[in-house]
Length: 112
Length: 114
Image (cartoon, rainbow over all chains, first blue to last red; front, side, top):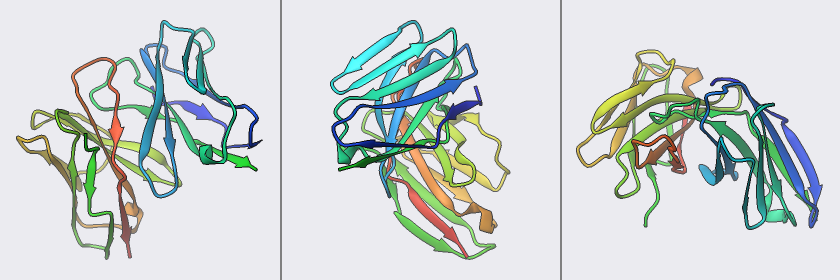
């Protein structure tokens, strides 16, 4: 559960949808997570998905999981300037004990 | 419900010194994990404590240590500081034990080693 890949940057215009993609390698991962980090702050848990689900929707957030391809995406509808932050994908590698494996993060910039 | 509290928020030390960081988990949470975040390495897992026992450990030298108290509060210690230890140290708590371990993070302690 050590290889989680994300693109580093994404820029969108306010009101558009944002899609942040992530790939992971550990097929034993049972849960996958999206965290948000704003400047000078810790990580905020946005949402998570169980590995036997394909999709999860939570207000403006939609998570899609393709377990066969080990691909996870986070869609943010009607993106706002307040959504500008770094978004981290993480997986639990099939076990937990406090350890999640994080990607390097995607810097989302929302232009007015 | 109060979140995860980390103190101090900022810390400046010199090489060779030691430092202790503190973390108070969310009330009722019994697991505390520590992560190091740097621009170069990203988020790296240090260790995890549950019921005062270290259950999991990342790949860090022995200079990095931690402990957990009976009230679930945790401290981590770094001895003989090196320049490369400059980082944001994040603490996370969770209810544990559970397969779906949702970690809730504090704001971190920004450590600068000069």
